Image (cartoon, rainbow, N blue to C red; front, side, top):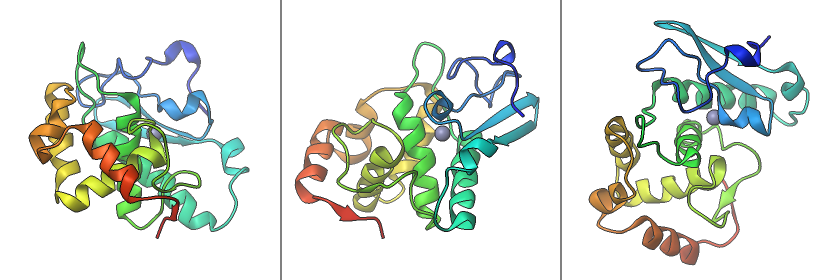
Length: 181
Ligand SMILES: [Zn+2]
């Protein structure tokens, strides 16, 4: 069961860290899967859509655990602040990076080198972040810390010495289609 649209505060205008609003996972716009909802201060609910679960194939326990890792990451990660929101795809990418690091794969059928732009979100961004994190351990954790204060693309330069566009080009050159391991 999900809250009625009238009770939903559009993401990212709500912040789990600072308001009583609800958080709507952007994935719901295109893929009715799960959403973490904050119904009161300190209370969080993750709603899992039976309709979406019915579309899953393969190892159900692994996939459902992966979804929960993704949604739990949304609860704990920073989302920028009013007037300085990060790309929505970065938020989704960080959440998918968390499930990837838990050896639960990424959302959908992602593979290393996938995508046309670093902030496409989900698997594309998660696998790119994983590449950067391998080069610069703790990169994603440090990036998340910076998101507390808002968003700037220069965070990539600050943390790695390279711009995000340069890192993305390096990544695309290094990897062609490879399976996620
Ligand atoms: Zn999400």
